[in-house]
Structure formats: C-alpha cells, structure tokens
Image (cartoon, rainbow, N blue to C red; front, side, top):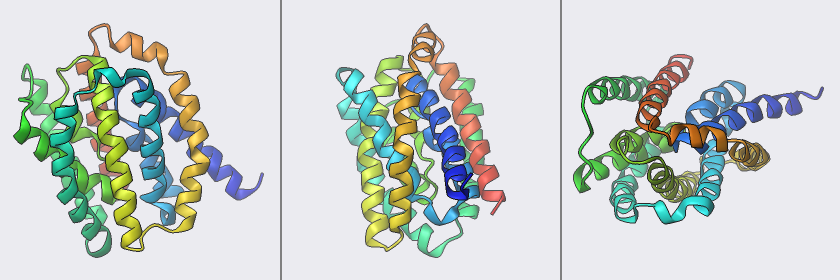
Length: 241
C-alpha cells in the first residue's frame, strides 16, 4: 500500500472516531485526531485539523441548530478572537509543547474541581474567558473544545452540541484565516484536511445511538470524561515533541 494512502487511512480512523464522539458529546474530534495526525505528519498541523473542525459542526447545526444558545456562543467568540491572536503568536514564537503541558494540566485540574460541583457558572465572564483559552489552544494545537464544554457541562445534550457546533464552526474558520495570514497554512495542510472530511461525514452518520444514549441523563459525565481524555491527549502530544 502506498505510504501516503496508509497515513490517510490511519488518520481517517482517528477522525472517524473523533467525529463519533463529537456527534454524541458535542466536542472531541480534535482531541482524538490532533495527536495522531501530529505524530504521522506534523507539517500539516494544525491546519488539517482545523479543516475538519470547521466541517464537523455543519452537520450538527443542520440537525440541531434550533437548540443553539446564540448569546452564549457570542460571548465565547468574543473571547476567542484575542485568544486566537495569542495562539498564532505561540505557533510562531513559542513552543507549543510547553503550552500543551500547561493547558493540559489546567484542564485536568478544572475537571477535578468541577466534577465535585453541581455546575459551573455560565455567564458572559466565564464564557468569554473560556473562549479566550480555547482560542489560544485551538489555534496552536487544534484542541480547543474543553474550556467551552466545561462551562456548558450542565446543559442538555442538544443545547451543548448545537452551541459548541456554532462556536467551533466560526472559530475554526477564524484560526484558518489567522494561520494563512501568518503563512503557517501550507497547501498540503488544506489538502490533507479536505481528504479527511469523508471520514467526518461517516463518523457523524453513525453517532446517532451514542447521541440518544447520552441524552438520557449522561451528558455531564461524558463531557467531564472527554475533557479529561482531551487533557491527557494534549499532554501526550506535547511531551512527545
């Protein structure tokens, strides 16, 4: 089998798995796909993952857009803009490994603390702060879901998925533009991301049973679990550099 085809299939399995998770929980595509794609071909990161991060939410919004909390997504995107700018500076000037370790530890601490609480306050301040952190990590590493997801962990499944989808679609497009302006978006990254989109479609198509299972009162547990795994994946990706 051709080497490039083999890499595409391996990355495609990761994207498919991540799409199934995100189709049910509302986030998770980046955390599954980004570490493996980085190991396979770091030259296409983070651009390739941002392409699939932008494609996946379109399917969720097509199904559940009426459940999106537009005001909350607006606050998060307000914080995301300056966060993306800092994330771009990290890509150019700072070690993403160092950032990944710091953020991974922060997310794990947040998961432990919020797991003991009934809910996290969801207001303009917390959403803007979460969007800011998501902008930094999402632009620099392709993994930006946990901060927003932790704020929304006590919401109902459809609301979490639709709101996060709205946020991810706009923020991924934003990150792609910033990476392009900084000349950190090679054509190979766009081509690799586009080649992985069919795996996104397939993953979303088979995520229905997981979605129905989690909507039966298990969403908060799933959000915390995926956030914890995301932090571990980010730590592993960063320490492997």
